Length: 440
Image: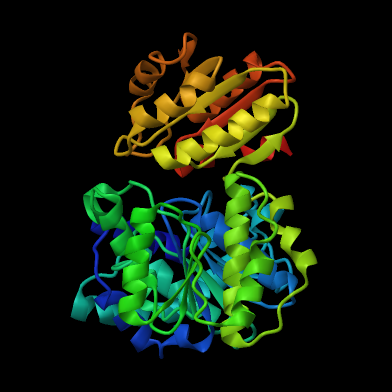
């Protein structure tokens, strides 16, 4: 366990504490590192992690060094702080997180050195403003690292994923050159509000005056909130449904070129298109020359960890971190498409958190399944496998209960024929317990 991991373990009791005063004080103490590079800040209910990954890959394909800050991680904290375009660097821990998918993560030695430098700032801020939370600490470390990642010099750009909402999220202490909201659905209603309009109002606070807010959202009531906020602060809204270019013909050309390859209803295709538009907005803001169209097909060809990620072909084994009804609906669409190409059945392996709407999620996914193997992760927030199974029996006639998580995957493999599909889903805690190395 690294020194940072030991420190973070002590912070879990602080939970989520809205407010920007602690992260702002940390960044100020370190000399405002987040101002040394342009930031693309990406929020939204679902799809923001994939959009960040796609955008960072596209920028790196142009030869740029790109900081990538995402959450949650699958295996280790290192995965949240990555630099693409800087060569492959192993984390050196020997477990699944050192596989090629995470070879660009910050190494243990770098992370410990960064933490040692950061500790005086963390302690000083704690004494004045209260203890920074786990997420605030990691956000500070990521933003500071990006300012010195290239032998003491900053990255060319950073792509940063919002943790929760927008207004009071620690990442909103940045001053993004481009902001992105993938789309809005009901989730975290206890913190963000129980209507789409309330959630949209919170998320749109990541927009900045005079700069672009990109969104793939199409719901009129949400777009109305985005438009009103952008108008009130003087931001430009680049919307897939209702673009407004303020007579900016060059920006319009960049947008249309970036959006041109969106030719399916696949959620990952939409996320990739959103990333392309965000890249066009960043190029426009930074006056960088646009990259060739050939780069646009790059992201979809590569797996995004934990997002409809295929681990095996026969039977097809995929994992997806869908953790709310909206995510389950997108996964449902993907599974329906996959099942049309195969003669086999779906074996669903759900493990869902108790504080999520697991009944709705099971109601969306279980009707597609021939067999459901209900399980639960080791997370203290996990819903009991028996509870998940009870919901599944309302929609599927063959339901088993198997724990722990890896035993449920092994049971699915025992039952599966070569043309079947096994889908493990419900939360990132669940899919993180799948033995990825066993499929390589």
